[in-house]
Length: 579
Image (cartoon, rainbow, N blue to C red; front, side, top):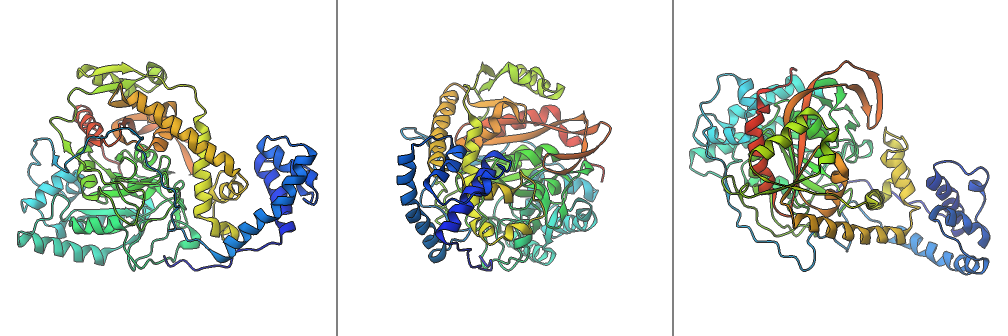
């Protein structure tokens, strides 16, 4: 990583403690505690600032004893910061594993068998070729109906015409794409077929390193960052024969759709953002600017933009795709996944990327099978009627369709647990990943400085209790065990996209999800400035509506197979954005 190094701030011990007391009071309450927040921490009684933050009550004697030991604590912090500076790629010694002790997860043999259907003839119009699903493009290339060079030129032309409107590309790699397409065609001519991604142009979220090409993380402090090596998944996609068109936008440091160059747009409604943080990947895929794209999810960054942009997003089981050479936000949550225009496309991409890599200690060695004919047989579908009571007509139609297909429907419920507490893990890991940004005040370079934005979150996380962070991790294990108990009774859970906290829960358990566009629905929209900030109401317009399936550990095949059946019934592919 070629980030310029900065000298960390240093404070004397008293100044450090005074700063901690004042800042901590503000971070904990969201308001300045009058003059108390500015009072110097110069005597044991002043520790009651920290007690107020953490809900603790100590005696005077206990405060005095604690106070005497704080200088040693501060010394340890100062020594580590001064003598062992950490970079974003330095992963923790402790790694998250979504597999529960004592559980057996059946092995898979890395075999892919798509549904038996014909790709048909090559369309006459370039637009129809551009919007075709990956599996059709793959078959056309394999049978010589289209060359990779022609398909690449179709996408480069569309990128040139439409990407500026969408603000969805940070860097277009036209020369690289043309060279890789030419190579793909030469290999095809020489009977050196690499597989279903051979010659397929794709777009890559700009937090995966590309050697010699800017990888900006969407953020002002890193907009000139040029890595020296490729990320592991870039290597794997190249080995699969895929053609890299360029780097797509992401909300700064993987949050939202606002990046240092602008706001990425929803191709179905240019007056609103595409959601994030895989903003550019979802926007480009929905607009027909690539055969498929790569996104990431920490807490909704595939599900949310896929929902907004009407594309199919697969968030695989945690650890399936190695993150070597990618920006770290939260080591125990970050996941790569494909964003496509068809469900089975996601299986083809996942198959090329799946597998352990030494550069990512959290990556797992577990095979991936997909068989369209068998994966959906005998599925037990979990749902809760309450989730659908106030759902849209489309959500209800999907539930009815699944029932009509004859699947066993099992009512499930989630116990009342403080799932929101899990957010502490993201806050703490994110603050650790970007400690240097906070300590050097370069966090002020980020445009978005609202209370809910990363700079403030990272600052506040430095005042969180280390004990509480560990307790939350223990609670996370309880949630994993709870969900495992539910998946003993069902194979797939179906719900409206953001119902019942399933997005939060399943990201922390590490289980997969598939978000699938179903139909166009009238939606009251607002011009989306950033995150939850809204302005200027708009009349209802037709926009994509998706639904999400939450799968069991390592069983992406089941949610993809069920998704294919829904895709064939509702035929969302007949819709296209009018750009």
